[in-house]
Length: 252
Image (cartoon, rainbow, N blue to C red; front, side, top):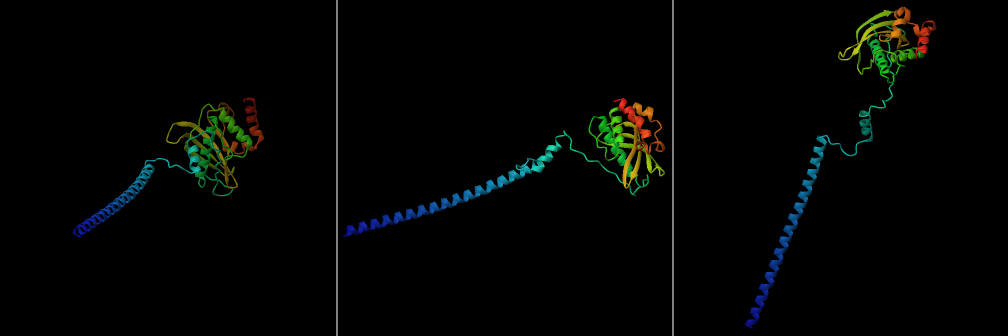
């Protein structure tokens, strides 16, 4: 009987030990699971923050973000590709009053249209295309400007044209202003000679009625007396412009 009691006591001790060991294992497993989960979450957070920081660093350092809009790519293309040039539109200039022009009220617009013609004329001398419809609708005058530029003894193209020493004289009887100026480059890059313009108005729009410049030998020979009196209607008068057109035809 005593032996039976000893066996029972041993079994109870064994069962208690097994139960204690199992409980201990469960607690350890729970702690490991908790620690592992915490580590994973921490790692995910750190990686996310790392990627965000990296993205911010890329942006700050000027790295291009993948997926730029198509419009942006097109703008980048044209900004770095100069040929062929984009089509250019004529720049129109207007007087303050309809059918009236004056150096007092229209000074800035007159200087602008003369400078614009200087720029386009210079493009022609350099073999580039030019937009002349902003200055005149007279086809003979356009042909004359083109011819004169092509036969110029000086390449006058500059991206920053500038007129200096400007002198203006009003001729209300001819509805025009006579302009005399020195052609130069913006910033004082050297004088380019002298030019004379006759600027008139039709409606509220300004036009260049005639233009004369140096460096064209036949121009100096046949148009020495360039004045408002003689030239305000030059390209509307066949008796005046026909001899010039004949010279152009005979001297291609």
